[in-house]
Image 1 (cartoon, rainbow, N blue to C red):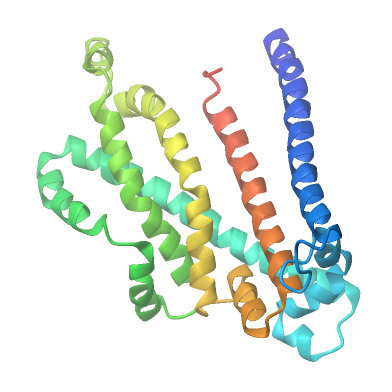
Image 2: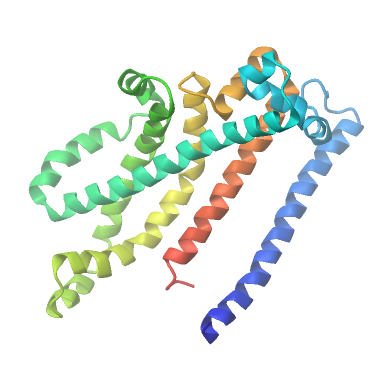
Length: 279
């Protein structure tokens, strides 16, 4: 292992530990204020149960995550697997939608800038459809894909595609022309210019846009799941609403927050490794 790699790890570990400590302190402070409000009887436990209430009986709440476990008498392992299956379904839809949106928008943005005919044909349509809310695409997604994973993934893709395409165009336009000219003088082909010059220059900005829209993508998936396109955390939220189960609602909100938190950390680590040349 090289000396720079060892030094980078030594610098990274204290920073990670500090961030973890502050994250724990922040969550503990929030939970402490919530518990104090419950203790002082300022918050009705039937409407806003404190963390110790909706976290103390995970197996009972987890039994409500799936219809088959609600009607039967499942074991503890089956309940835990049901929770993990529900969380995994939502997470998988978000990840696939984000990857598809990033790849396709990057390809379309590059094609628009480097093919004038393609840009003239496609840009008016993008400008026309970009203002449409992803929720407006929900009936279209259900008509085309039916029920299941596909419509939820499609909504995440649509929510990201137009924003990422416009961001790609903006980043390419702001790229100094001297970068491309220097590469051409050195004999680089168009593919080499894209891979070695343009892509490294616009990736930092694209990752920023991707992280900003990560939580929006999670919200879109929850909305899609809540209308019945497939099981997931969004469907559990609707079950909690229909049964007026505040304990289930807050437990599901806790899970959703944890999923978003973990996805953001994972995306930051991917960004750190892909953009290895940046501090």
